[in-house]
Length: 472
Ligand SMILES: Nc1ncnc2c1ncn2[C@@H]1O[C@H](COP(=O)(O)OP(=O)(O)OP(=O)(O)O)[C@@H](O)[C@H]1O
Ligand SMILES: [Mg+2]
Image 1 (tube, rainbow, N blue to C red):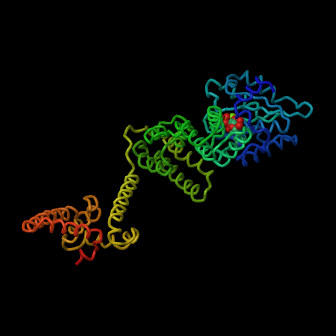
Image 2: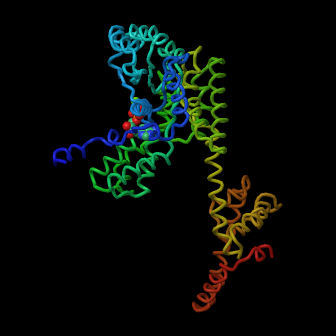
């Protein structure tokens, strides 16, 4: 191989170099492969299926175009491909698709018409082209395959009804890692598994993005380590904050925008549902809009539960749809309200629970070693007694002495005593002052040596203080 060719080969994007050549090489899309193969098989038997067009849909970079090309490559089909810019006019469609659709296979070599990214079709400007397609599809003699990210766009409805729908899902992290690993082997590239895991994670199921990231790091640095991947891809982790996420959902103009808002949000799905639950009534006023929005959220919760606890991760796609477009397009009757978003009650409660746990752990940390018990025993057996002493005993004196003896902070006393905290703190302060005065008075007649001994004794004693001493 000449140097020039080798250099050119190096620069070849890996997404092209390693694109699947056979259906087997398309990974993690078993359902789509099954549906599409059966459909092509009907064509091959010379009996066009009832739906003569197929619509492959799903997020970017998951193998829609690749699967059609791999199938055609493996079965020796000729692919006649059109993309968004060709959809403009009825004429262009008639010229290319119309001709191909009625072309008789020559020497048994089939033809596949591929209309890539059909959701790029504009409802008004491309109306003529769309009409032409709708006319051609029921009569075509060759399979027509279309791809789209969002098949639910309004303008696609008439097309959708004529198509076999073939869903593609985001690829799993494991499958993405496996493909990346294979590329590393073929490129004889030093790769850390942890780096591949990070690339896969950040790609969010988009293998094209993952392969491009891998190539960018490899070509820049000659190896792919975790540290390099993290440094180079850091920007990717930047996610959308909750305020922007809410705006993107409530003011979404298209379903994909609302869905993107969900998948890009820095919040987890439970938190996002909590935010929407509390903010839907601030944005929607019409009861039927509210009903649809809450219905979407409640279904999202059910799917999320099943996705997580039965590990059916494919259900997550429904969760995104319900949280995003489900809420965004629930508003059909009323206008959107101007009110500001509010912090959800449930999140406030969870935050305060976290705070409660923090203080409780802090007290356990401080007291358990002094009482000679484990933190777990302290929390299970001693803390309830302290609560009774601090909250229910007839006099605050014991609680005040305990606070003083253990050096409890204001916050800790508040946690233990609740509404009685002020009373206990005041009394503790009084006792502290009285104690300060007392040793000074005694010390007036005592020697400095005696004072020092007493100080040491009391210091030594502190760590061994037991509850009994206070009770006694
Ligand atoms: N399931 C897959 N198996 C193997 N390779 C894949 C798969 N999905 C994507 N790739 C790799 O990513 C590249 C891009 O994939 P492809 O063009 O098929 O994505 P797409 O789903 O059509 O995306 P878009 O919606 O953006 O058109 C392919 O060339 C291939 O290298
Ligand atoms: Mg594509």
